[in-house]
Length: 582
Image (cartoon, rainbow, N blue to C red; front, side):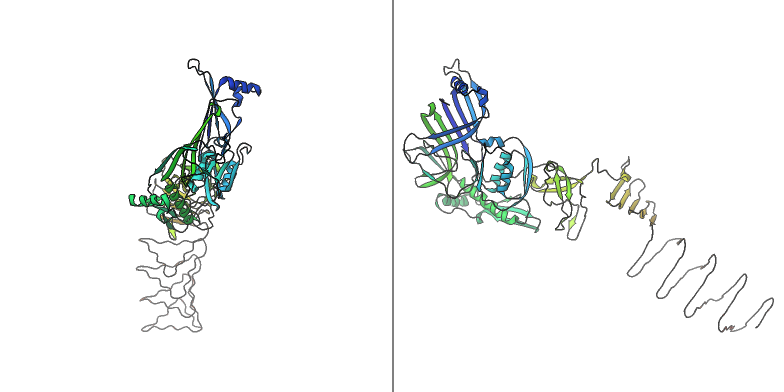
């Protein structure tokens, strides 16, 4: 652009940069005509800005910025005397990744790999990444992008794990290099205004997180974390301790994994360092264009890292200045760190894809509806039960392909758990449960096992897949039916009693085997009858004793033995129509 009236560039950590250029309309029209374009064609074009001092001195740096024109504003100045203007608005190329809400998840991936995968589909010629200085190397068990653009997701993730995130004018950078060139600013030379703010912040916190894998609640005090103890930060830390004496307890809603304790410790350490940084701030106005995001400026032998800067130009660059904000360089922690910056989700349905928990904790893996398209899933997550105790409880695990309802601990999308199952058109309730008066309550397993309560007749039915059943009919009767056999086995005694009649009926044979003695006692009469033959066999001796014994055969009576003794203690009578004695 050959001429502009004013220009400003606003830059901040973890945010889009905004470039605004105010030009006379005829200048813009002439520029477009010379390039064979309409003025509207500017939208979407790449724009570059480079500024350096005319003075040949070493302490002045260079400002470089590449952006994308995102809008045009037209101002008619007929009565203002200023003329007609076009205001060109451009943003850093990071804007192309702020393209609307999206959903995704990442399992067992490092911060660096998550960022690379999230941005892989964007035009790298417009937006390139630099993640080589990312400090978060260990894999994260489960990370969720929920209802947020890729840029919003990356911004939140950087804050969550204390990773520096900023656009340096050419690349979107994650992490902070080991060494940064310093820019010395001096009042009266390139520094026109300086403000220093000292304000102690509360830092006395005790953080907790639950770890169900070890059944522990992990704790970490901010006072036990490493922090600056020297210089102004050290003084402010002591002032904070004296001023804010009460210890606050904070629940850290972190995902469960084998590294839960270490992750809590690291998160608390980062959070405390970020809180300390907020105590000591500097702001100023200077004309050195080398002041840029994350650069280190040295003022009066103290170093500060720039976290926000606004560059202002007027009259085609005849005048330039910037206003900047910085924090102490004693700590290299990301100032926007926030341990509570987690994705917020709401109750939703999912499909079970695995239920064979390798650790035997009754967990399942599920696939949210938004995970289906890309074949994603949760890690092993817990399943709500009405009772869960050591070696006991209510153990019902959803089947694979079941639709379940999933909620989230503290609303954290990275902490899901199953709260129950729901029916759908492909998974309908058992047919036997269908009734207009809702009087059937039942449990039915995958293989056909049934426990049914009928509130209409008061009956309870237990039935297996073969049809064998136990029915309590609600009228005082119990019916036991087996498709094949009924076997009763007891380690000690079996006692059976009835108030009136006891009937045993069998279609073929009835066998009673007793290893020792058998006793049959009746208070009245004992009848033993058979349709054909009755045999009583004993290996040693049979005795029949009664005050009177009658043995009668309607056709014949035969007593046979190797010897037969008939002994009447008083009288022996032998009668017959005819008596044959040998």
